[in-house]
Image 1 (spheres, rainbow, N blue to C red):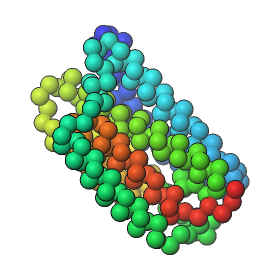
Image 2: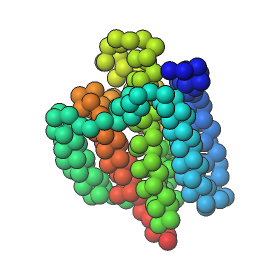
Image 3: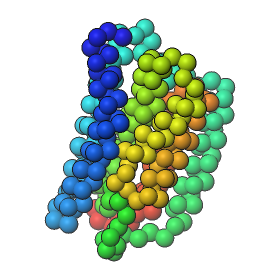
Length: 230
């Protein structure tokens, strides 16, 4: 990497370790305070997330441009044989999970006096649902590129020969700590999901499978939340 790419890599990794947990908490607190008085706050939050995560991709693109195969460097490559098997398994398992979620009782957040932190981001009307779907698609790509593709690329560049399971553990830890504004149970669930996605990345050889896993998993709130308003 050239000097600019190296500096940006260090800054981006520092942001992942320090900035993401802080900003996540600040965004959550701000949204929670605004929701009671501003019904458009959640939709505005979705738009901010789209811009913010797109900015990550711009930085990562600048870092990777000097490389011969920039996409492959962060795991955006075709599936190997194991990858196709894992992709099929992910679709099957997540389809069953989503079907079960659709049967769960739907409780509007407005009826909850103190809704869990992780449900604050759940869409509550048709307009929010449309933005939420877009956010899910973009964040599924951007966050996997950031936490898996970039983090593995960065650490392997600094410390060649790192144990793959160490990288899996680091990914789960970083992704979990970026969601510390949630309940302890939700942080644990997020960390385990990150662990699963890292293992899918490791054994499929491609970011496509964890992105698919994340994309389908993030659709669950759409099946569990009531959205009576247009």
